[in-house]
Amino acid sequence: METLVVIIYLFFVLLIGLWAGRGIKTMQDYALAGKSFGMLVIFATLSASFIGGGFSMGNAEKVFLVGISNIVALWGFSIKEILVARYIAPQMMRYPNAISVGDIMDEHYGKGARLFSGVFSLALCAGILGAQIGAMGYVFNLFLDVDRVWGVLIGCGIVIAYATVGGMRSVVWTDIIQFIVLAFGIPMTLYFGLQHVGGWQSMQNNLPATHFTLPIEPLAVIALLSLFMTFMLGETLVPPYLQRLLIGKSSKDVIRGSLLSGLFSIPFFAITGLIGLVALAMQPSLDANLAMPYVIQQAVPPILQGIVAAAIVSIIMSSADSFLNSASIAFSNDIVRPLRKTPLTAKAELMLARVVTLLVGIASMVFALSIDSVIDILIYAYNFWAPTVLVPLTMAILGCYVSRKRFIAGAVAGIGSAIVWNVVLQQPWQIDALVVGFFANLIAFTCVDRPAAKAAKLADAQ
Picture 1 (spheres, rainbow, N blue to C red):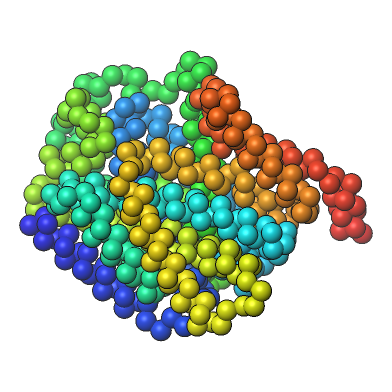
Picture 2 (spheres, rainbow, N blue to C red; picture 1 turned 60 degrees about the vertical axis):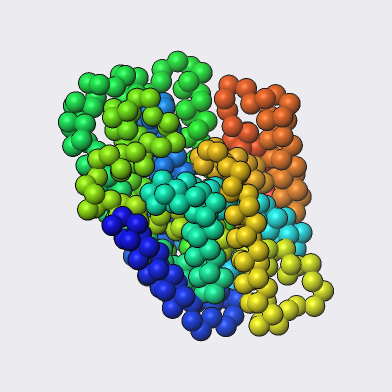
């Protein structure tokens, strides 16, 4: 029964994706779907995009091991999303023709910055995509008893098919379906899990008290703050989320959709983490990677397990398709386009994006088969973004003074400090290199070219 439900669901998602992708004729349509979406659609597609394997099964795994501190760390992402809705989203209508991070960087820093951001966008998206596809293999193996390799091939094959054909339009429509399924299935898992272990009080009595408290030792507090900052900075304005800020019908739709998404993530991260505690109460010797699947298989009634299994598949597919689409746009629009002396025709540009989507998807399948921990891969992938692109991109969108000198100084400082912190110093005090790289970039960016910044400020005042 469970297998049949998932098969029907996958077939339905594929049909919706292929149907939604009809009539795509330009790169603008392929990347942004005609800027035609309202608040609720933006809320659903943005939420479905960031709720991937790391923020669901990965969160349950870490809470199983260390307790609720991992939920608090993930709330760094929630705070980020709320801040983006408040300060970044209102500015996005200044870029009516932008379809990618590179378009915005080009406008403020030139072609070299566009190429630079394209390379790091591709690296980030490919890393996160690989993590999601790797998780997909585990899910198919656990719930459908399909070999992990075949799970990767089937799940990713479906995503590649509709993302290649329909681009953002297919991604958004499938995200809506996937969001509805996961928003119902994951809370249901926690409910039945708590019932299985005798309720909240019974679970709390049978688990170590340390799993319900935050650390107070100085080094542990520093490590928690570092992880909080990692999730706050690691995915800020990454290509899929920035694209969601560009697809709205109006600024109001983008702002409200982003805010709803940030608010929704707070209880959702708590729910996925608490499933890890339920698993610990059920079977303390369990492999932590299996925390969420174990609760589903042991606590959810058989008649509903198919729906929950579909929810887990939804979580992974909805992130995978978003990062696959963005990787394709980054390569086509931000790497190939600035390197060509003569621009491609609209038809050739669209064909290139589709071919790249196919190739990146296949490459990510190969990478995914070597993955162990989904959430650790996510943190590693974040190192491609926060120390390099985040500061100059944010400063430009917020209307601060920017220049090529500032961009270069920040990038050199960010990359250099991240490498030294990780490779030479071996990550002291458990502070992640992306946090150090981000602040090094920020300091260098704001300290360079100060006379020109002051002159620009005086000119604006007059």
